[in-house]
Image 1 (cartoon, one colour):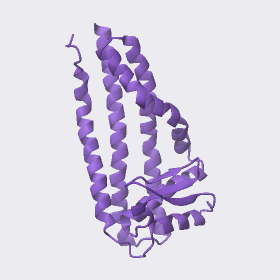
Image 2: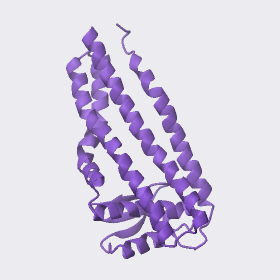
Image 3: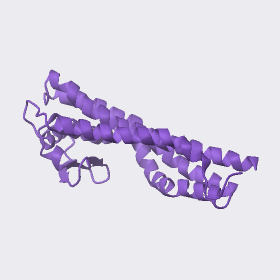
Image 4: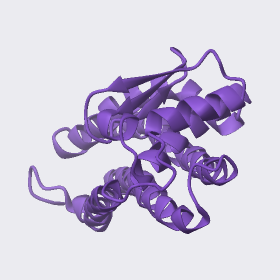
Length: 231
């Protein structure tokens, strides 16, 4: 049907890869832009995170500095909020926005936010699926023309797709919580809310892009399976 080593389905993911590259550019450029804009109240990202945790009664969650740029995350197992140096020490609107967002994840964990719990339970199988499912299906299609390998790859990779899709409400909710926390806590002025929101909206694009890429790959695998059916 097609030459050896040729995968005609790859064209499906080109548009979403372009969008993903744009999302990465957007989040970096927006973060860097507002990293230069100091919040008028003078708080650091670490101070905002710790104060929010204190107000919410989350004394078991600690805030620490971690290496890397945009490496900020909340570790639900260790109960640690890890902030990059630019966010931990920074007094910018970007720093406060990211710190509040990650604190939003800690609050989600504390209140047993269902999508977060579901995503965390999916992580082990999703990690396995993202590493094995796609290569298994593609190699099964290109090298072996094996319907069985493609179908196994589809099933395994589906867990990774589901993880990416479930991630969207988790991240959107954390950003929504972050904006509310920044406003109600008095960490930013009303005029500073919009720029902080821009940082979080740009970050959200990367999660949308990741979900679209995974869905596009799944569609690609389903087309591969149908092609083998037609042979």
